[in-house]
Amino acid sequence: MSELEADGSSRRALSDRLAAFSVPGDLLRQALAHRSFCAETPSQPSNERLELLGDAVLGLVITDHLYASFPELPEGDLARVRAAVVSTLALAPAAEALGIGPALLLGKGEVSSGGRQKASILADCVEAVIGAVYLSAGLGGARTLVLDLLGAHVIEIAQSARLGDPKNRLQEIAVQMLLGPPVYTVQERGPDHAKQFTAEAVVGGERLGTGVGRSKKDAERHAAEVALAVLLERARSGRPGDGRDQGDRHPFDATHA
Image 1: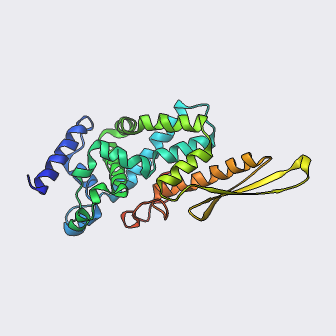
Image 2: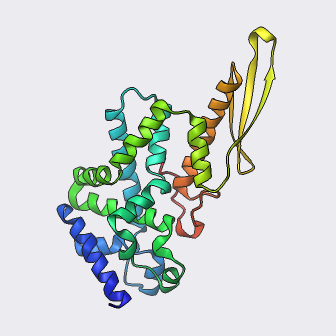
């Protein structure tokens, strides 16, 4: 079977998986069309507009689900869970599970450079597919797809937020991003009966978070919370240090957290 035939078979398989949402063939094709393919096929619109729409729908569905399902989580934890769930680290495996990689429409250069396995392209494309499902089946359909893909991950991350230490989560994310483990520096001031500690969380040589507390542990925890929010935002927006190929994102990317 030729690569072209294999691509067509993979797109038919993906279409079958999405049959419940009645996504028109041309809309699904657009959702799978990376801009490298469109540069070689000018008549084909890229998936960038659908990606923008899908990003917004994804954020709404996940935020609504978290708000309703985890009433005990404070706002800060809700924000961190949402950021983790909609990050590239979560979306790329979801795209692979859905079978998006083999179905992608890529330019020849992107195919030869391993574009079907690039986390950034996969994450962008699953957002575009979510956008296409939203246009075809409304918010209810998009919600069903998103929670089918990410619901288990939501529970896992929310459980971590409920029981875990942000320092542990920060170390996990930093290592996944190939930045190495965080390093903390702590300064103290004030008399013995009213000590105040200020901690800085340094990741990959960059100071990402500062926290203040009545103990060294509290200060480091607060610093880790700030640094974790920064890394999760970068993981979803394609900024430096997140392991995403900057060429695969476009300027609207300031959200996904």
